[in-house]
Amino acid sequence: MRGADLLVQTLSRAGVTRIFSLSGNQIMPIYDACFDAGIEIIHTRHEAAAVFMAEAYAQLTGTVGVAMVTAGAGAANALGPLFTCSESETPVLLLTGDSPIGQDGWGAFQELDQVPMTAPVTKLSFRPKRATDFGIDTVRALRTAMSGRSGPVHMALPFDLVEADASGGVVPAAPTREPMPLSASDARAIAQAVAKSQRPLILCGPAMSETRNPGQLAALESALGAPTIAMESPRGLKDPALGNVAKALGQTDLIVVLGKRIDFTLGFGGNNGVDPACKWMVIQANATERDRAHRNLGIRLNACFAADPRDSIDVLAGSGQGGHDAWRREVANLVAARGFSAENNVPSGKITPAQLCAAVQRQIGKAERSIVICDGGEFGQWAQAATHADHRVINGISGAIGGGLCYGLGAKCAMPDATVFALMGDGTVGFHFAEFETAARVGKPYIVVIGNDERWNAEHQIQLRDYGPDRLIGCDLSDARYDEAAKGLGAHGEFVTDLADLDAALDRAVQSGKPACVNVQIEGLPAPSGTAH
Image 1 (tube, rainbow, N blue to C red):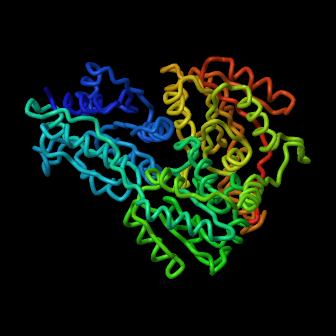
Image 2 (spheres, helix red, strand yellow):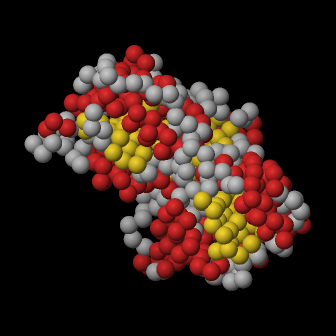
Image 3 (tube, rainbow, N blue to C red):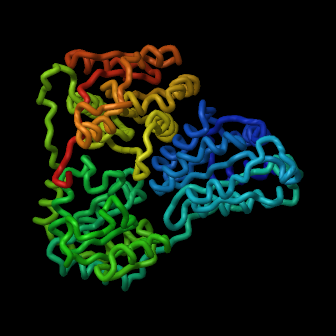
């Protein structure tokens, strides 16, 4: 048994059935081992795409997503999405090839000290030293990814160990997440503080989203009697999907934080927009994040608990006393508030982002099971604010853009029976456009909807606001026919310039049975805004 076989058998025993990967010399033995183990390889066109796909797959399946790339430049190409996984708190295992450990310092092919490169954006990054340890090392990595504040981990696999005899190694039992629940007494203390407050608010981190914890946040809100809001966007209190949530924050007298980092998305916990007398209680599994809460909140932090919110929902709910019905309705209305309408037209006569999103929403309404993917950028904010589905994956707190097309494929792999809509701008679709070919090749149909305003509109809006209309530079894009290019890669293509044609084009895309690119010319409007803007 080779090191590669021990690694793959351990993954298989842990329930891994699919790996997102771009091939390369140093990982060929692992490919060979996957053949025998029956693990499917989704072979991508870029290393970063493999990690993005694994991120979406993990969020939708509740498992650890696995990506695998080769050494050197391959590992370096995967670095950016690791940051995205870290910020979105998504458990992903990145396996990278590596030069032989026996040739360290010789100048081997693609020799690169990968561990310090990935360490800042992972929970754990290491290079195994013995082939016989591949089993226990892999289980350690999977357990670390899942436990506490979940996130990505990295194993750099030396080529000589991948090929070495690992007959003395063992295939460990499948790892489980290490629980960190609140104690019953701490849960009662939090529930009592909520009951005594007038306008309590519960803010949750991205790992607590509805997609990853279906129905649990609503149940917790009802039990505790406090509005419960998951925050996933880098725009924080300015997230268009949360409407006028900033107004609710300005009125609250108690904020209970479940795994939400006290960072820029909350104004670092400052008094701007929050009553200085407001009390804070934080539940956080990660020691660094607990320290950050103490530093940013100071004396306003009434209590900080070392616990995993995911393991604490039941005990919190069991201690809840309900109530605050009028306040909960008020906050729900604030979050649902939208300052735009699909009924409004623009002087140019072009399709508006709201109209495009409304048409997509009509398609979502027809689907038995739906997933919406929202990339970043200005159109991404429109999509987040104006669409909703059974499940949602967004670009996340990192603010990275360009992963949406990859998220769509990962989502379709996670839930093959779901209708998947991936919404993105003409800027973001260019990052990984070649993955249309991947989707067509592996037979994963989903619908990519491009809100095409022929510019990098987020930056255009910044320039327009901060420097004026006479100082716009570097943000224009062309009238490229992305739909035709997608056809050339094996996808279905639609080009829409008239609102009257939009629904039929989306119908054809859904019914095509192929990956589809619906390229829609829109007016480049700024993202919708609430009271925080």
